[in-house]
Image 1 (cartoon, chains in turn yellow, red):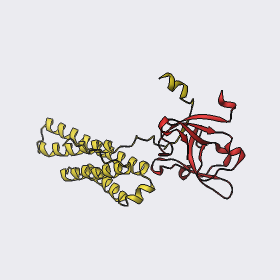
Image 2 (spheres, chains in turn purple, cyan):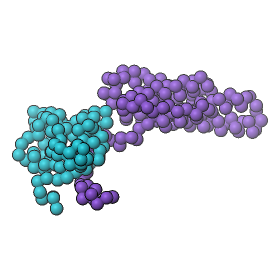
Image 3 (cartoon, chains in turn red, cyan):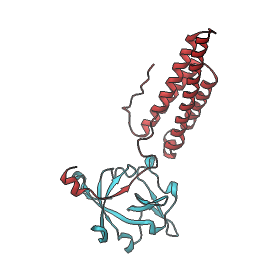
Image 4 (cartoon, rainbow over the protein chains, first blue to last red):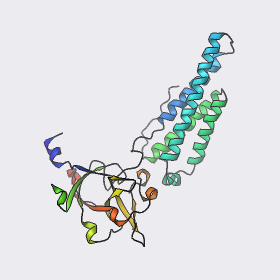
Length: 148
Length: 112
């Protein structure tokens, strides 16, 4: 800390805050979970129908990860939906509730089924949420990365 | 040392008052402002956070209710927790008015 800053810096702070300290919300966590769901759905299809022990074991592990990551994606989406987005966002984007409901339903569908199309739809819907989220912060320079 | 004086200095954290106040601004606060007059809509006031009284918050006075309760709102509504969440505050929760910014130098001047 420079001498100047030491002299100027107040010892007291006043918080112009929001409860979620700004910057904690990011659709990236939901996107990463959804990508794992998509990856597991593809791997399950590629694994085929073998019933030997090793294949059964691998299949079980893929299913467990798909289940867990779909649940995680849903949880991350619900946090964004209910904690980050506020009435002014809804005025700017009346479709927010439909988009999140659709995304949460896709999480459920991906738990129930092994469905590559549904998994891709989940990733795509989170891409829409990514765009709405960053537009709400007046940012258009945040790319939607995907591993696939 | 300044504690007994009328003016205090505060560092601003958070982005709910952007662009009037930015995180990292250093400001001067008139602690006696509201012992002499009522809060007025448009003032940027400091207040004790009703949910965590050790924390001081900076928000703009949006309105005075008929009973005297003060409605505080952040200018940056998308990133603010304010009277929309915790309701209007009693006037004695207000601890001062932000009057002047002295840092950064490029934005030195009265706070409006």
